[in-house]
Amino acid sequence: MEIEFRDLKRQYKNIKKEVDEQINSVIESSHFISGSQVKELELELAEYVGRKHCITCANGTDAISIALMAAGIGEQGGGSKEDVVFVPDFTFFSSGECPATVGATPVFVDVYKNTYNMDVQKLECAVEKVISEGKYTPKAVIAVDLFGQPFEYEAVRALCDKYDMLLLEDAAQGFGGEYTLNDGRKKRAGSLGNISTTSFFPAKPLGCYGDGGAIFTDDDKLATLCRSIAVHGKDMEHPDDPNAKYNNIRLGMNSRLDTIQAGILLAKLKVFKETELIAVNHVAERYTKNLSDIPGVILPIIGDKFYSSWAQFTLQLPAGTKRSEIQKTLKAEGIPTNIYYIKPMHKQGAFVGTRSSEADCTVTEELCDSVLCLPIHPYLKDDEIDFVCQKFKEAIK
Ligand SMILES: Cc1ncc(COP(=O)(O)O)c(C=O)c1O
Image (cartoon, rainbow, N blue to C red; front, side, top):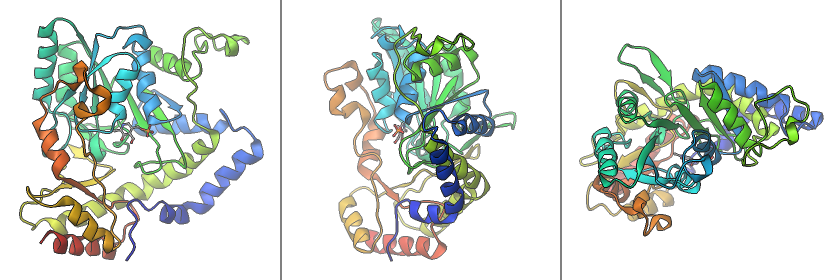
């Protein structure tokens, strides 16, 4: 059996007609940049996520940088190098790269062993430590919805309020996930930060056929700033001015979502909402049921208040397991696996010698040595899931 880690070919077969129609319509219109599909998608995404504004852009990395700049954080945003942005130590590089590239200082915080998301108590300790050092100012938290499960929203929100910090949600992996508030209301990933970002990288829960990203907020001022920064700092404050297009009132970047990608996403969003989220949750449930009796293996834990969009199915292997041997054995059976993530952020070479390399993140260090991600996507069939489980059980013996 040959299994795809994320089977985009199978997905395309399922929605070929709708995707091809969208692509052809963009080519025929020749509106490759800022065509009508971009606005249409932004409206649909904002409605789905439950936010006033959606601003699409070129990728999920730009989305974080634009959001930080719009919030005035780091030298590029008009702030300073001493602006601290707290980021989980266990995440994709962009979450920590962006605060540094906009000229702020990322400080890395350990995560919970069971959910992989930022540990709120350790976040408060990190904030207090930064304050006590006297040199830096806590400005923002980037809370990541890792592997598809939203972060501990209410607890992080309370800390951000207590220390007057911006809450930026990195929902690159969380799009489609949900958090249930204490009062029972549900909030979708992408609506959990003062400003939230996502990625449409092809393998993400909602992916396009190239790079793409989006920013979500309810704040009119932040939204206008993000739109401006994403298009060369163009004057967006005077939309009726015919000369506004070439009136660049701040430094920005060229970060637009191509119209073709917007068209593809319109087709994919429909099936994502109607069937894919349910299907991928079925895959995760079947994995969990099949793998629950292996001594020492820790399966993903989704808390009562959470709904995951399952960007990854990440388990922890027992201490002493030869992870590379397991991967080799599974590969020989046609089963691809990945390790997200193999290195804590604070140990990345880019941060050597900076304040960002100072972190006490023992859980992350342990996870980097023990995690393994199995194939997961909405088109994985039951017999394939059972095959992966059987071969995994044999390999771990
Ligand atoms: C948590 C997280 N943040 C940010 C990004 C960056 O998104 P992109 O690849 O679209 O720039 C990714 C993508 O892998 C991610 O997983």
